[in-house]
Image 1 (cartoon, chains in turn brown, orange):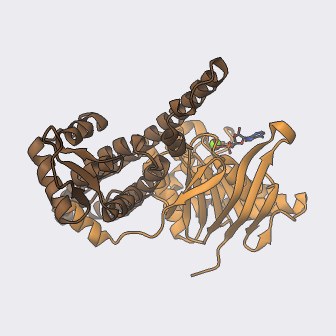
Image 2 (cartoon, protein in one colour):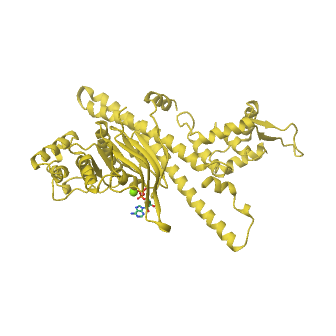
Image 3 (cartoon, helix red, strand yellow):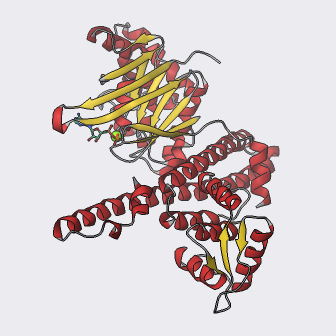
Length: 216
Length: 242
Ligand SMILES: Nc1ncnc2c1ncn2[C@@H]1O[C@H](COP(=O)(O)OP(=O)(O)O)[C@@H](O)[C@H]1O
Ligand SMILES: [Mg+2]
């Protein structure tokens, strides 16, 4: 799912072709998800089939076929940015990739992406905590004697739940970290822009407008 | 559903004036029902403590209204506000704040005695509350004879002794290790399940997870809030399938 949407996110920035999409994807996600060319092309094929991406009729002078996002693709991508990653049905890495792309994708409000993910993860953490609480009560109620096996079973279950709690907790902490790094970066960018403006008048587009929009 | 016990409507709190004015809270609205524990999270300086202090009548808002059990804190005279605070709510802080020369039971009885309850009755009520919270064993111990977690649980008992139904806790687990912190949260959760309204400030997600709802503050504004729970069965099916 995330490769598909990752490629769509890149195409939202302008038409591109397979090999370049592959290298952009790897670069932009810090190499967390290496792709092979075959994977890129089969994904693009499916996107074309689903009407989310359109391809040029003819290859360019170097034999490359260019792909671009359709209106339906634009809409689907917009939904992705604003919907928290459903951690129960997709690999966790989707979140890493989504955030890595969101930082540089123009017109995407990274703070909103972080915030809605954190809310969703905290909800998950709360539900896990409810299960944990029930398990704690059962484990304490069971004790020794004939209930001994029950108690051990309860203990194992508690440890499983704790594993999920630790994972969710780590995700929330990472999201907090992302947010504070972005905030520091926004301050630094603004300062550089001010310095440039006073030093020597520079073209306004030296400071990527998309960044400012993202971070405010 | 019952009527909310605590209602904050469009609350604003500006510290200072003129150029140096700091808007610590900016139009915050929040309801807490009896039996509900609400956690507040947010970066440092986002207004969490200010929110807690305003909700507990320790600080007055510059705008908006705060009502506890139907009484409007903002228009209350200082004396009446102090009385309402003593009788209707209790505070729990990071550093427990128990009086070292008093036993656990005496510490818990203290707010009642200060409010004019006779010593014997106050002690009896203190023991009742300690008993409810499974802390009877600690009754005769002095603070330096208790662990941090035990002291904090006694502090919760003190906050809720008598007829007080609103507990406000600012980073109550801040000085505790993760496991002990969780034990404290469990106790707080139990008190809320018994009908107490709770407001908890924490920066630990695993502690906020004991609350019914988490409210996020940034720059004095509520930016998000977690809603209803997933059904446990769905959660299990999904996690098992992963
Ligand atoms: N008494 C005060 N005078 C001036 N500014 C204050 C005062 N109390 C808090 N503030 C400011 O209000 C903002 C919110 O503070 P606070 O509620 O303590 O945040 P938090 O508990 O989330 O760290 C901060 O910018 C803080 O500096
Ligand atoms: Mg604070």
